[in-house]
Structure formats: C-alpha cells, structure tokens
Amino acid sequence: MTIVRRFRTICHNLNRLTEVLRIVNKRAKPFRPIVSVFGKTRNDFGHQTTTRFTLDSTYQASQKDLDWMSVPWMPEYVNDLVSGKTLNDHGHWAEYARDRYIIPLKEARGGEINMVSLACGSGHIEASLITQFGWPLTKFLGLEYDDELRATVSGRFGKISTCQSDFGYFDFNSPDYPDHQFDIVFACHSLHHATGIDLLLEKINQMLRSDGLFIGIDYFGPTRFQIEFDVIAYCFDSGRMSS
Image (cartoon, rainbow, N blue to C red):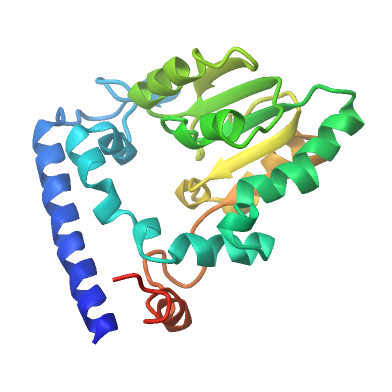
C-alpha cells in the first residue's frame, strides 16, 4: 500500500510539473526562426534552452515536490552507489570526489587547479562544490548556451572570492571547443544534450591535462526518466519510510 500511495503522489507531482511548465511557457517569449550570421546560427532573442524555466519562482517553489531526487531515500541510494557510505557518514559524491581525487590532484599540481563545466546552467551545483563541499578550485570556467543562465551563474560566482571565474558561450553540437586544457572537466546533467557523444568525448579528452579528471553526472541507461524496480523497492521500502 505504501508503494501505491507514493506512486499516486509521484503521478500527482508529474501533473503539477506539467502545469508549472505550462505556466512558464506562457510567460516565455516566442522563439523566432534561427538565422545564420557569419556562418554561425543564432536566435534573434539570444540563445535559450528549456532549462531556463528552473529560474522561474513557480518552479522553484514546487521543486521539492517535482525533483526526482526528492523521492524518499533516493539521495541515499544514488550517493551510496558512488561512495559506499551514508550521507551522515560523509558519503555525498562531492565529498567522496574531493577527498579521493580533487585534493590529491591539487597537491600534485602544486596548489592550483582549474575546472571547466560544460553546460553549467545556473551554476548552483558548481558553486556548491566550492562553498558547501570545499573543492579547492582556484580557477573556474563556466560554459553555457543559454544567455540568461550564463548571466545567472556569473552573478553567483561573483560572490565567491576564493576562485577566479570566467564564463563563455558553448554549444555541445558545435565544432568549436576551448583550445586550452584543464585539470578537471565537469559535466553535470548535460551530456545527454550532445548529438555526437563520440565526438564530445574525444573533445573532452583533448581538453584534459595529463592525469586530469573528467567528472560526469548524467542520465544513463535505456531511458532517461524510468527508475528500475530494484531502486523503487529500495527507496519506498516501508522500513525506511518515516511516514
């Protein structure tokens, strides 16, 4: 019965998400035809992505009900796959990566490391890696297609004094990639936007310095939105539910 109740809750939340997207869509400016300028495609309104709706206050107010990571015990399940620890035992993936990979890399580099984030969005995750999880980054480059998201992440990092930051336009499906190398290439929930994943991974390899790190967090598997039954059983087990 618990699983049935939670399933109905998820369906209700999906309906709410549909309504949120409908509201946001009504507020959004219509897209104009894409034109070519000096050989590059560009939208008359600027570059936009659907991820921009996450900046809307209506979505943010409902995020705890709509985000799949808000499902009970889902964060525990996901982070345990990475670290083998509970969140109370410092098992968050960001802590695990910091202690096992990031800090040793900084020591090997002599104290300075830089990171580029591909399709960084509003940058809330990247900023939290520094301010909440203590990643010792000294330089950060955020690359993003959406103009408004790029402005948002720039403002967010403007409040972080310990890390020098810069931001630029980026299209996963364009042949134009940064021509310099980085200690860390970071891609969070963004690789699935690339139409040519083989070319993308080749480019990422070229962007990495010797012994550099590629950290990718994404939707992998046969479908993007399907949660396997063993995961559902883990997250909705009555012994783990507090209500």
